Image (cartoon, rainbow, N blue to C red):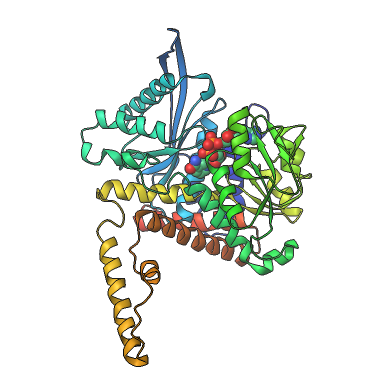
Length: 477
Ligand code: NAD
């Protein structure tokens, strides 16, 4: 329980776990081991602010499960971070990694700061000191625990983490693999920045391809013409919106920290972003209506609602007023456990966070592999593949010439389009798509098998895989 008497975030994740566990046949002790959080490191450290004052910063790192190592999970900078929150988010990471077959245990970190109150120099000092504290207690390392970006952090913080870790480790050879989400020039992988949003798009697209599910929601198959509302225009929300629009969806509502806007005829994403960067707000966007409160956007009628900000946004008090047909949980924990029941009873489809935003950790896995192998994906075979394809096309061309007596050379554009080798970005995006498509059908099958919702199906899939992992280790009978 939280101090407010409401179930805490971690309790809520466990409630959802328990709902699914009844569909499995694993011993109670094993289920307890899977859902308990193995270690939480809570720390306080001083930093000197630009004005010379000393401030004590509160920070956390939770490693939920070591059934696979390293553990993996983002680091968030948010004023409200506490131990319960990082435990809940670390647990979701454990289940998420299992669902998409990424061989990591779950972890999560957080620093309790509102980053807008700190200068870049101060953020650098905080990040470096946090990394140093993690290294001292063996909570970071390529084979130990590997952070990534999350709410309020990005490539810059990951670079500071990598640089600090490199300076204290006695294994500099693999040090780049201590963190993912780095810029490409510092060991990052192409496609990581947009990976979570791209994964959200693949997941929604897959859900909308199942004709029988769409029919029962009263929706046509496919993404073309679907109306969407997005809460949070940060890394995940912006990219999810961008790929959805490219596939033919129409944005009818947007919510940010400062407020929300609506236009049933559609909001142009890039123009809103431009308007926000020039005025500091999405409000008063030409042609759109301002909503009274930011959270009102969640209640707009639409086909797909994409909460992409923080947890606890859809609760008992507003779940009855959600008018979306599909809620795609791009953020972690945006729907509370009790609101989840209300939405399900109302026939709203929820694509659950532990699957929906797994694109980030999937591509982080590709980055980690790249760092440990010390070679860019595709570097060894790209040109070889292109030459091979060109040779095959030339043989086909000469056979056609011989048979039909048409000595025209194949148009060079066709040759260029077909005879190419996959770049790192091609490989990353195709690995991501394959993972998201495969995992969707897996959780969908579990949901159908047990005649339940997608979240429960996703938890069953995760529990079974983790339990099998423990059994194979020979720890449990
Ligand atoms: P971000 O910091 O890039 O963006 C979050 C955005 O939400 C910001 O623009 C912020 O102003 C906005 N916001 C905050 N509170 C809001 C509110 N009440 N209403 C409307 N907007 C609000 O963070 P992000 O990386 O996009 O993460 C968003 C969510 O996605 C988090 O739950 C995070 O855990 C989850 N997630 C992120 C990743 C990743 O790769 N970054 C991976 C998996 C899951």
